[in-house]
Image 1: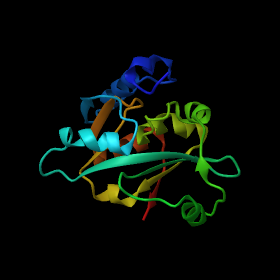
Image 2 (image 1 turned 60 degrees about the vertical axis):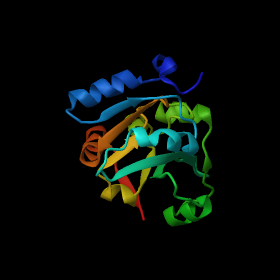
Image 3 (image 1 turned 135 degrees about the horizontal axis):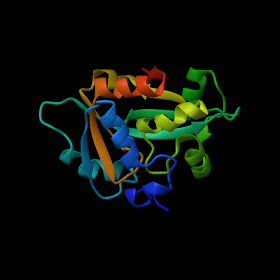
Image 4 (image 1 turned 180 degrees about the vertical axis):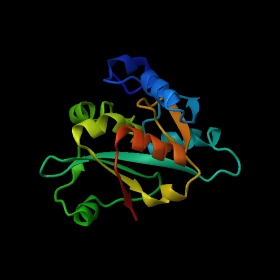
Length: 176
């Protein structure tokens, strides 16, 4: 199975259910549908469709990581930012950061590879996943991310994303 909405009903929480929950909470976003985006390069090929003139828009890349003690991390970065996992581990005071398996990704964040997103913290908080976000997001007007599937993107105003985190009980650690 891939990470598209064709298989969303096999996820613990479907993309449609997530969007309905966000609507119920009064959160605003613009929903875009597109081909499945599997890489940053794929995302860059369509992101111009999502950007509104005059908005400071942040497009993310997201990493699901584990440390030697089997703690789970979701790291959301500006899509062009380079990251050194050893340096990040040192900064966090943990050792041996590596990419988590697709099975653990589904178990802890309720998503498949290619659809990793801050919105997956709706599941991640229940599994004690640590969430780290690029500090540039604090200056963005709008943040683009997948709503648990990779053939949809939501463009969400930053205050609404922060309200989402509050609603799900997600603490954000900002990465300078």
